[in-house]
Image 1 (cartoon, each protein chain N blue to C red):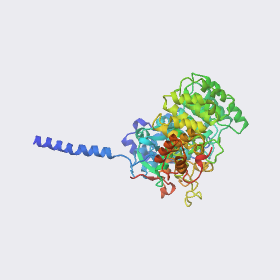
Image 2: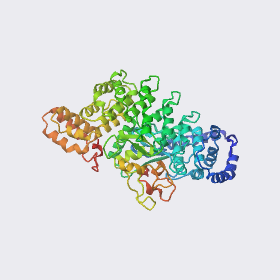
Image 3: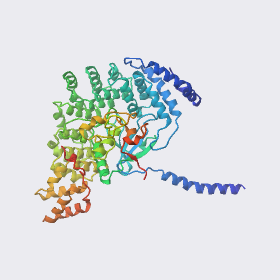
Image 4: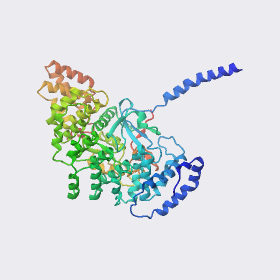
Length: 223
Length: 396
């Protein structure tokens, strides 16, 4: 009887172990370079979440906060930082070419040691160039969702734009944050009114309003 | 209302949710009428009253794993925040800076919209006084600098406090760096004078200062058009250590100020000798910002010295110089054409494909023909850098 029980245990382990390994290895997130990844913010779960851009070989470009050197490369576990990971998202119209340029943009941000963090707005810039567009070297301060918004929209892949009427009955407009005149429309932080407020949470379509995905062009990666 | 966190257990969590939270909400609703900023005491922050309420709501969460989903606890925590007045919201931020400093910014982002509403778009008098009190958490003080500087709320008093932070060598160097990076030209004459009274060059010159503080001083000097900025830049020529992290800001600032062309030999030395990937990446980035044929040539020449991120920076620097690459493809010099062909290949420059075909057909130089062949094999003609003809990449 004892031997049978031992045998059963061995059989059970033999069946379960590969299953567990299989489950462990298959628990990966569908993602490509250039996708935007989102996780919860802190141990207290309220708030507007945190985001970054997936680079080559699974690294994530992110800006963490007031300390450190601006936009940095983190491995996925460091980005996730033990928090609930909500997944990778992108604009379904994105192409492989755009993904490549988006990665080059965030890499350039990581090379600029003068860029620092702000909670105030997605992006702040100076005007030392006469161009109508914000170039990376003009960015002075940026928020984590600003890294995503700017890298995407400079490359004409839209993420978020305010409502044309300023109310939830309007339509998203003025998407391109790299256009200097549009920067001001991306300076309203929040998630209660995603038609005029933006944050990582609004970008991933998780604002607590009816039909929150109406206010973002990003969709979850499912394959 | 004070809650001792040591007695918060499962039982008390239930108690908190069932009784304390509604009481807190009622109390807070009543206290909404309070006006004027009251600086929270350190002991009131250490009590973590608001954090305890948020934690109790957090523990009651019902997790929803939907990709769009929101857990019930998040909604409850947000509702709690909405009941707080300005002083209470600021106190909550102060508590969170103690309770969970690494994630402070995420809480700040979440609370800031409500704080702005309570403060009616202003920063109350007295908030900036906290800046110089080192017993308050440095990140909380960085947040105050952020809302003052980036919210265009600076006045003489607050700028004076920021100046004190910058100049105080016993201050947290992270905070000093952040304060330096928030200095920008002021239209108001008095504010401008206050800013210019900071001896930034002395900070840079002090080798006992940390690299991050000295680097931020360089950036501030450039942004404020400090008369000593070019003197500081000239230290590039004296740099003997190609791995010195200070070089990152020196080359970047030089490029943004249009001065990098004066340091081409130094740039070449850095690119050839540095073993530091970040120094290398910032130098390649600076070349892209600076622009021009020599910059394109140096980027192409050093592309691949470091793999991964540095190669992406190289691509960006070439993309920033599309006009230059286009005109180099029409050059009379075969060397320039070869460089431009290699640059086109690196960035997959679809728009240049017809011109490269012409070069391949008409050139008599075997090296040019070989480089053109290579580029034609790698470039996808349909891969347009400027798909919508916005000319963003061409702007300078």
